[in-house]
Image (cartoon, rainbow, N blue to C red):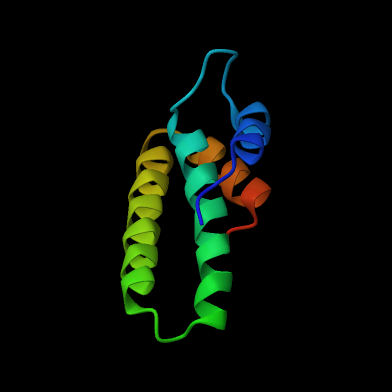
Length: 89
C-alpha cells in the first residue's frame, strides 16, 4: 500500500527544508521510511510475498544511498535526521 495524500502532506510539513521543498533528500528518506514501515507490516502478515520483499529491499537500498549522500555532505544533519526518524543506523 502506498502513502495516502494526507500522510504525505504531514510528512512534508514535518521534514521540509523550506516552504517549496518537495524532493530534498531528507524528505525522500522520510517517505521511504514510512513506506518501509508499512511494507514490513505487510510482509509479517504475508511471509510468502517475495515480490513485495524484493521491493522492500530496493527501498532499503535507496534509503541507504540517500542517507550516505546526506552523511557525506552534512554529518550533523544526518545525525539529526536518523534521530527524528528513529532509524538505528
